[in-house]
Length: 317
Image 1: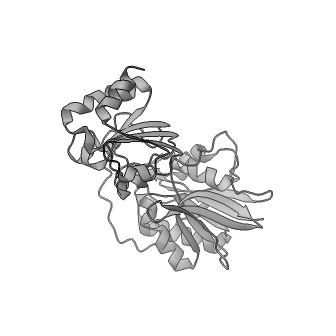
Image 2: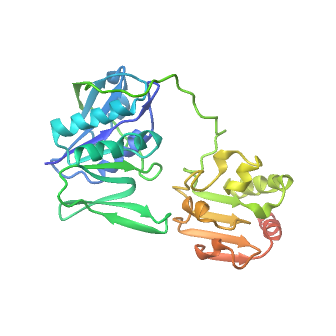
Image 3: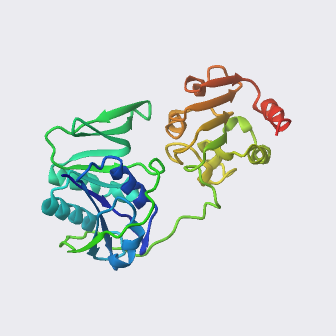
């Protein structure tokens, strides 16, 4: 029997949806007899327990501490959980919070570590984690020989959030002492994305430098809407302020995690942009430059004027 622990993510006393994705990742490797627990660190963890009481969860570990995010505290909580329970896997959502404490906790405990994990499986009783490498050029399978505990950060918008309801055991755990080196001054929410969800979109039409001028952007907003697509863009478009940052696809923007069809028009295909979309099975590239990098990852390529292609598409939608 193995102990699996998901560390929930809350913000200002509200459970985040990423917690259900982390639970789902562990459910995908849960074997008969395994115990899946979810640790909730908050000022009132009991009040948040219902938000993670989904199918497959056997226990909620309520750690009464603070709603303010403190990386040193989270590191101490994980250390205490590992020492007390000897879990085979501890998982947290991959993001800015986890970056500040997960690697430090793994190093301190001598655990195995894999970050930005997009796939999990068990082979011959051993954990295998899949993550991207070399700027998304390859997928790497990692195993962890000799490690009793593995700490994972799980890529968001990959695992379908765990659902259903159950009534897990709720166990209280005292918050460990932590030498907190930061002071929380308050929480400033990110700017409203206006309903734009690049990560969740299954069909994305993206535009790049080839669009030429801000005045031409509206044409592609209308085209995307008529096609049932979400309009995305490369970094120069967002940097110029022609489209909001929430629409940017790439390493400094959003990951097209659920995309099934990606049409890139006038996008050169820099490595940074490819980070956000090269994993998509069906990529259609439109570019007037036959040497553009985007063609190296596209399933279908059209060497031509993006405005002429857009006009043809408009005539069919």
